[in-house]
Image 1 (tube, rainbow, N blue to C red):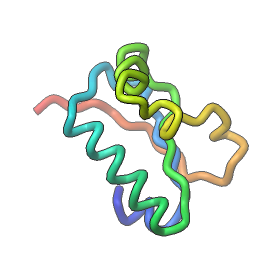
Image 2: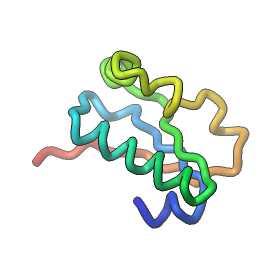
Image 3: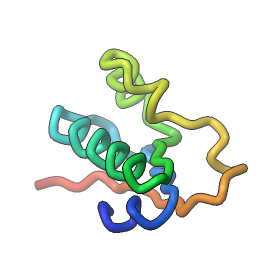
Length: 84
């Protein structure tokens, strides 16, 4: 996804993600930073209640979450949780 955020604004739909760990948070922060450096926006939308709580606890909700992604010219994709 890194090349994508370097080319355009991206809104990532997290509604199916039930949990997130430090590596997941680091990935979101990395994507956000890469997008900003390229002059684009990276946001997440529709986090599950638990993921939303985690984003709030680490104070990323105000930075990453967007309520109005449908009004902006974004590439939007859904992130599906996988088991490893």
